Length: 80
Image 1 (spheres, one colour):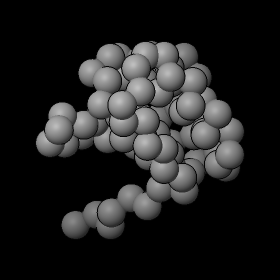
Image 2 (tube, one colour):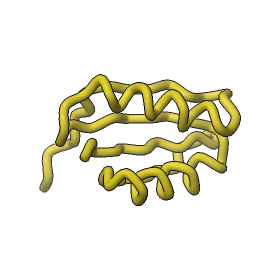
Image 3 (cartoon, helix red, strand yellow):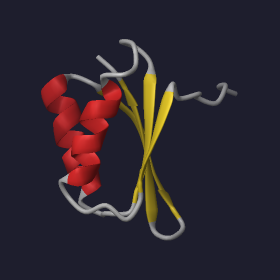
């Protein structure tokens, strides 16, 4: 069984609407080293599309997307 991923930083973007979760994530990812993980928890359903497109454009790795109760979404992104 794989060890749980431990993020280097976490961003609470709950309650924020597009484009604020993405804007804040872009700022936060600059604060971690290449290869480290940024965790983002958001409530805006549009963040799934936004983060997938951003990761593809910037070559970050979208490690996982999880839908939590609320509904909330938890993203783990590895910095490129």
